[in-house]
Image 1 (tube, helix red, strand yellow):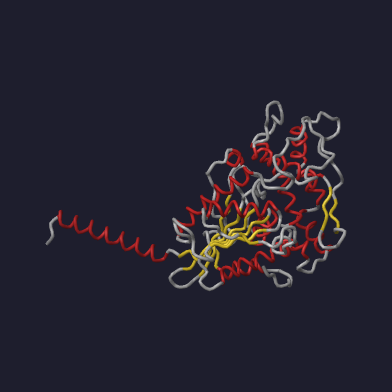
Image 2 (cartoon, rainbow, N blue to C red; image 1 turned 30 degrees about the horizontal axis):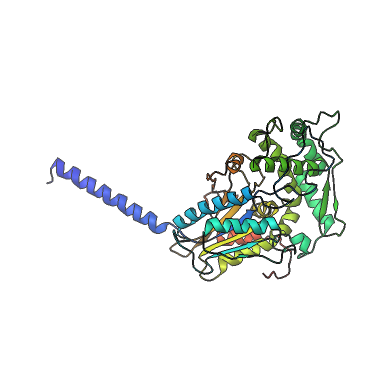
Length: 407
């Protein structure tokens, strides 16, 4: 018979073997990353003309921007390069890209919309992701409408304005009620603008949603439409480092920007989150994502550099909520991105894990390297992954027939 000491030693050996076996089994069961597809908003840009309505009153002049309207700033480009470096390390740890040197031909594919801010954003991100590699950034001719990012303008799917408006009103409870719910944020916006007038600093027009003049989309008027752009300009000023300046815009703090961000986030309840709008806004990019996952030898990374509408529409198609540190729920900051990771296990089962990547306003302002990249849950699949076929079903549900998209 074994003595007490021998029995204890044998027990320790058995426990160690069991632990090793469990570790090996866990390692064998860990799915392998096939490909990552990134849907990203461009970086920090100068305001669009009229983004803050021209009749908006302020207590101090708007800051002067260093670039023309709508253009990516040098700081915006630098922030994206920093973000690209962070993603390179993350993707290398996953085995998707090499830790050093240039990826193989076709391993990284970047496609942008045709505006200066998206093209320049793609180039800056590429410089961080694949430094010194001369990675090609593809896009259609500058200024042309790319249906991948702007499907309504491109007219790639049948669009019924009446059906769109009915869906929007049902989803929001009515655009006038949206404005009523956001009255505290509208009042705070007036305090921040500090115009000192007896009437509101930001216009308070009646809320309506109507067909656009050409019938290819819808137009929103009212406080949410007007204030959403102003709130976005205030955020852009802050992350660019233009405010608060000495004795100017002193009321702007990150906590206030988050609250005011609800005005900008509400815009997407109208333009991308109602079911009718989601199906059309997300359709072309959904197709591209699935094509990337279905391609033979699908290892590597695809980046689509577009707009906040692209990110919110894709999230809406999955029923996923966009929450990020420092921002209102449902808002998308400059450089914010949805990341879809294709996985396959030893049995050949394929699934998709979804991440939401952002940098906080303070991090963007100081050009920091801290990145938030949590897994976000898709309803019904809270275990961090969704089977590929279910992912496919959700992205293609209710999509109208669209023309073939070619790059």
